[in-house]
Image 1 (cartoon, rainbow, N blue to C red):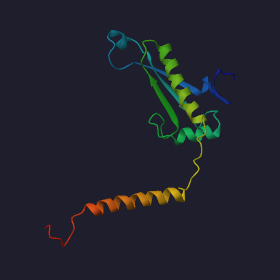
Image 2: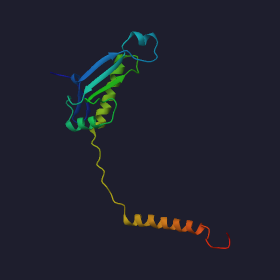
Image 3: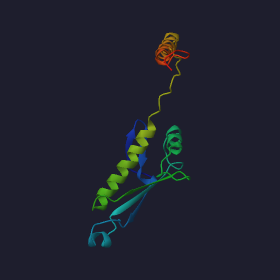
Image 4: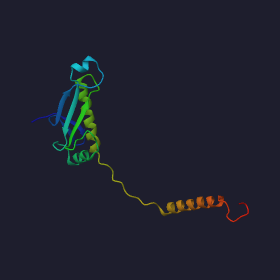
Length: 145
């Protein structure tokens, strides 16, 4: 079975046979044209059943994205253009951007410890501020009451 592939990143492609397209009527303003034609498209992409590398699949499924269902199917709707062809391109571009973002492995954060001199300087500044405020306080037991 031969299918057309769209290259996303190094070693990552989206294949046409993994994409499901549905033409639907667009919502919102548009006059009679929007009532007569199905120019909006819904693109469905099954992440677990795709040929994406396992780490990319895991990162996609771990995302907190309302377009990704619990079953792992991504549904992207596009209805901005008046042409179904332009809406298909827009939906595919958005899916490609989503997969490309998941293809980059996030950098691991290296925990660092605050240097001792910074810690001492912070405490010294707090002590100076405390002393300043203490000096401003009214003196107890004085004749000024």
